[in-house]
Image 1: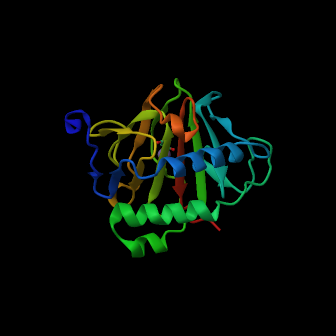
Image 2 (image 1 turned 135 degrees about the vertical axis):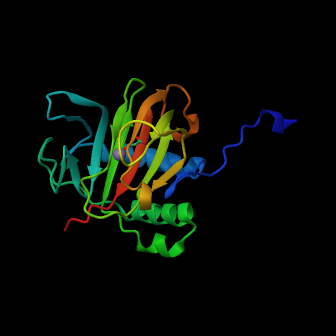
Length: 220
Ligand code: SIN
Ligand code: MN
């Protein structure tokens, strides 16, 4: 009778080039990544709520590897934090990104060719949100790889034209993979809602959500 209670979450293409693979990472791998995120969040160039040009701050806290993103450019040092050099993207993360692209597109050659040079690690407390935006400060259209850890969220994946409809709402849970590239690379997306208390207790995060996003800037 177990099947009556199990909710199946199939792999799904949300839009052309945008693929959601639920349960992509094992609990062990999730736990390792959560531990690494804790290390990456420490100074120098620590995690912070990014200051916005209008004077406010993002509700999400972010730390960068490879290139440092601040509105709306990339630098080699954390110019809006302590100006410390940003550590490189770890080979483990690059490898994870290659496997993500391989699996999302069922295309090992695309995976081998993937060379992310930036990782953004975002932490959402239960009240944090991310408005609809495009990842548009990169000069190349290599796919974006996004990994979710901890509390589930509502991820809104839209279109390339506007912040509004049509969009698709997807629940991203701990261990899920979302890749968007090709025709969806510059689509608007955002996180309107975190679902507190829904995380995988064994992944080492007692509350909140972590998101690891891999990007290729095309900068040298
Ligand atoms: C982002 O778009 O930078 C983050 C998306 C997410 O947290 O899932
Ligand atoms: Mn984004």
